[in-house]
Image (cartoon, rainbow, N blue to C red):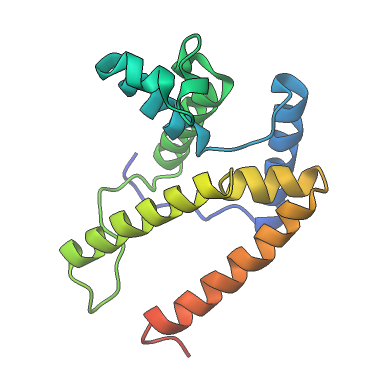
Length: 170
């Protein structure tokens, strides 16, 4: 389990399999891939447990208050992603508890930046009404203009951010 890590898959094979998973998701669930909606559903569920009237009256979370919010297809998708990631990392010998960081970045600083970046990406995905997999993969697969525009700006923003944040980039 913790032996020598096996090599990563070839990117073309991984991309082909991801495309087949996306196709299967459309055929089985009628939806594409996506992840950010599960956090909205979790927030609605917590709201229903703690403040049911306020959650039901909320313009954003109220729509998730009908029925059982965590019973949606996206919840099961994310459970599958987590289990698949765990099984994949265990079977490839890459399961490790460590903090990925640069040589000059302290672990605490890296965790703060990772948390802040996660919060910003989460807020952005809700404003955009989808995450990278929802907008980029599923939107692109359905030939939605928003999906292609998102991917262009997503990669451009990533390259610009890397240019300013990474000191040893050449």
